[in-house]
Amino acid sequence: AKVPLGLKRKSLRILVTGGTGFVGSHLVDRLMERGDSVIIVDNFFTGRKENVMHHFGNPRLEMIRHDVVEPLLLEVDLIYHLACPTLPVHYKFNLVKTIKSNVVGTLNMLSLAKGVGEIFFLTSTSEVYGDPLQHPQVTTYWGDVNPIGVHSCD
Image 1: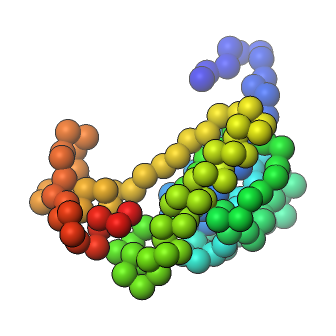
Image 2 (image 1 turned 120 degrees about the vertical axis):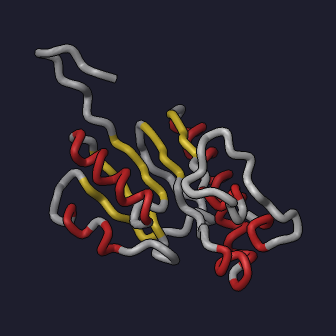
C-alpha cells in the first residue's frame, strides 16, 4: 500500500523461510529495499547464502540456519513461507525430506503465525503445472500433470 506523502510506513519484522533460494532471495531484496527488518530461515538444502550476501552486515538482516520441519519461536509481524525443495530430482532422491518440508514445515509456520497472530503467505511453484506445453504459462493454463509422474508428489 502507498503511504501518503509526509507519513512514514512502519518498518515490519518479516520472516522469510527459504530466503536464500531463487524466489526467496529476490523477496528479501525487495523487503530490505522497503526498509523492513528481515529474518531469513533456511537450511541451505537448495538455497545459497551467496544470493543474499550483499545484505550481510546490514543490522536489519538476521539469518538463522534452521530446518522448518522443526518448530521455531520468533516474534514477527509477517511470515512468507517459501521453504521447500522444488525440483523433480529432489522428489525422486529426497522424497521424505520434500514431503516433510511441504507438510510439517507448513504446519510449523502456520503454528508460528497463529501464535503471534500475524499474516502468513504460502507460496507455490511452477512445478504444479507439470511439464507445460507452453512457456511461459498464462494464468488460465491448466497444466500438463501426469498423476503418476515425479511432479505429482509435490
